[in-house]
Image 1 (cartoon, helix red, strand yellow):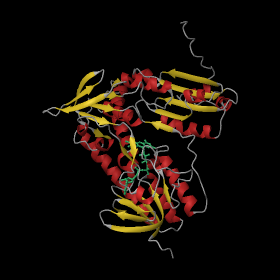
Image 2 (tube, rainbow, N blue to C red):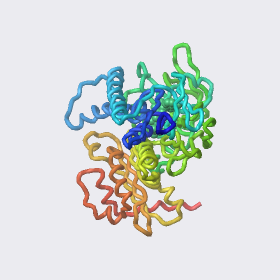
Image 3 (spheres, helix red, strand yellow):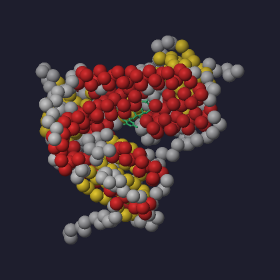
Image 4 (cartoon, helix red, strand yellow):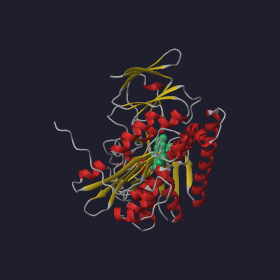
Length: 460
Ligand code: FAD
């Protein structure tokens, strides 16, 4: 019999913590999971799921408009934010229930409390004011929105609050250029809010392929989002009527009714007792782990956003699975973070897997680029001014497809299947040998024959 209360104590019942705990319990471990907010974590409660539901909601405005070209006469539709929030909350409650059920039926104890480490084998439950010991501890506390310290920042919201606004603002500024910022800009814009996207860098979506970034910028601007790059918010002032006056560097000023920050997320490691347990952290406060998600303290592991590797739900889940396999099933497994298909639910949507053109060029080996920008078929009758983009990056020597980048309807779904091909090491010749599905946008991926040659540089 172990001298500890539990074999595994998991701090945080989000994507990574829940999966790891369930699996460990299924392998026979005595498991407890502490959660300070709601079981399910960021993804289920205030991340991927409610966000995607809001994206769907916001797409209807264009769908109603586009229907006219196909013969439909739609009376002027009305929208109820209250109904959307209530329905979303109902769905989140259902998922929260399923997550709780999953943990319980695996035999894990759920402890509704904040847990902090007091040494390498002990956690303190803050509200219950008691200690629990465990042989192995898993830190899966996720991340939290990071906001700059500027005057008036207390008037700003983050994605956390955006899911529970009492009413939709008439005008909003979304600050940031990452995927959460562009997704929320699309949501608000689609729901009829006058939306500005303010980003301090030269182009939105840093880290994505440059063609995709430029095209998304152009497409969301066409939809009416006021996209401003190299734009810094330096102060927020709340006027007596509730209006927020923003001071912007070179852009002067702007008035809005709400401002949402999506300027990155910081690992949730503050006041977690990491020092007491002797756990090393990195420059952003992230828990430093090895390939098996083990920290510098032998019996303590960490998975998911708190380790700041690749901050996505399926990655946290994979890390949770690998941890449970390694520690509780004698099957050491490390997660390969190198080829992760990703979607951005911007409007238009992005799907991407593998290297960007810039990353591929950096390797120094030759590459061939195949790309096409075209009008999607639905736009012929809808009359909407929109473009899709498909781009393949191919190793010139081996013919292996190194990266695929797509923008437009269904691009996120596409990235999942293209990801399988890249995972298998598919070559461009194998893409070409695949028979097209007509009429689809995806057929472009198997019919791209002409190498892209960059335009010759004008003589100096
Ligand atoms: P989390 O899911 O954040 O779970 C951590 C849990 O720990 C939380 O429930 C928290 O309350 C709890 N906790 C923290 N500290 C303590 C403590 N001391 N004691 C007890 N409990 C504690 N990813 C995608 O793959 N696709 C998407 O479309 C996507 N969209 C997103 C949209 C938004 C707006 C956001 C914010 C994130 C999105 N993500 C998306 C990212 C995704 O949500 C995270 O990568 C994922 O949730 C990470 O899982 P995790 O287990 O590391 O942490």
